Image (cartoon, rainbow, N blue to C red):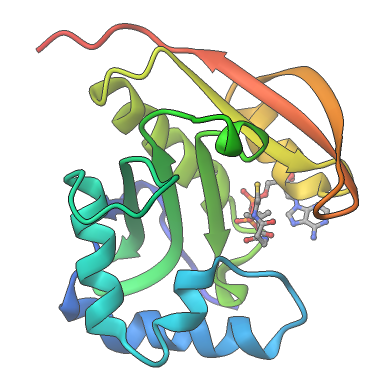
Length: 181
Ligand SMILES: CC(C)(COP(=O)(O)OP(=O)(O)OC[C@H]1O[C@@H](n2cnc3c(N)ncnc32)[C@H](O)[C@@H]1OP(=O)(O)O)[C@@H](O)C(=O)NCCC(=O)NCCS
């Protein structure tokens, strides 16, 4: 057990200075049976390359077909990475079933309110990006992720069967305020 002060959690752009801590998160993740985003696993082989891809994607550079601009953040306490969160700036037909925001919390930091706080911070970033509405699509059986969405005031809008993953998905959404600065 260790004490954490969630007020100190920050979202930062991926950066080489987080390599050691991020690879710890990845090593734990690959040893688990959970499905993890591709870039998390791939970073074990080429962390520098992944950091470049993620930061390029945030700037709308080097996107492949069917990819849209997206901002990825490491959720950090100082130099320690507790999780990762990604915001798609818009959805295309293919991405509609995945939603705007996806997140992953290190196994070492679970059940401490990190995902809830990460999403709260990501919603502020989404407002700055001028997103009108955010949607999050969650496996109906993923109780923790559903709670994270609900605790951040997202509401269930619909559910559907995803035949690629063979699971029922619940879609949660929240209308955002317009950001003026
Ligand atoms: C889902 C996930 C992000 C939750 O992260 P977390 O930091 O542990 O979540 P929080 O601590 O903010 O917990 C939110 C709520 O879920 C509950 N919770 C957390 N893990 C849980 C679990 N395994 N089973 C049941 N409830 C759980 C917490 O108790 C809390 O509820 P409470 O406020 O009523 O106490 C994390 O388990 C994860 O990364 N899973 C793999 C990737 C994933 O599923 N991402 C979501 C895709 S949309």
